[in-house]
Length: 356
Image (cartoon, rainbow, N blue to C red; front, side):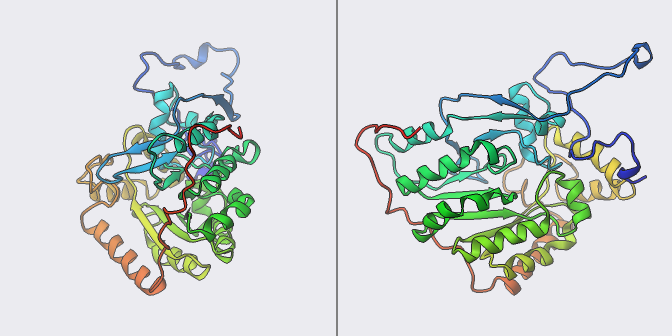
């Protein structure tokens, strides 16, 4: 049965369940539905929660992401991508990694103020800071709140390099700032493009921009001189793995200068969420896909081993690596992202009056 015919399938959402939060001792359960006079009503609308963190720049020292500095103005993501590794972080806030992750969005309105404090720290040396190391900084709520835009204004003001990962065309709203940053080699944009198949995209990433919309983003950014890398990530064996060459060609044709990819890994609660989803969305190929994912991770859906967790290993993983390498050689030959300029940073003597 296809998911369109399944009355239990939540249309417009990725996860189909709220998995149990391992940090919570108790949970709500519906043991005896026959004893309830009315259906149990659940709030399915997106809700915003305010957080006021004391710092906003995170540093990763993992061997896979050594010395990566990142900012996440939002936790949780309304895009609802079923495979998202960031789902597990929602459990630290007392929420589920499942439906809660895409319906309960945590907002950090003081992010710009904290970034300015960071730039004004004594002895600060400029580093590239990534927007969206965890969740998309251009998810739908950004259209209204404009936290990401305020952050970009600071990167421009201080002449500090910034990288962005997104799959949303809201980024085009900020072309004016991005164009100025690009003129000084201070910005890289990574556009995530998982599938060119619109039916697959709707199931994998229900509240994201279409593939054609993302290709248009690549083209419009490139036409303004903003360097773009396409991220064919994650590659899910048996689901979108055959699309790698087509994705890279389509992005290169629209001006992308580079490409990257990862092989899907289903850590923590994501394994349960993804397994439930694929049996509902693709019942006829669910077991095959799950077994192919396991073959890339030493027989497991979960994989936390540094060096292997994002690249996979084994015959299927190797074939994907070869396909990616050949596509890059064919479609991106002699192209590359320009290096960042770290010499333009504008230091301040002492804390200045904040714009925010």
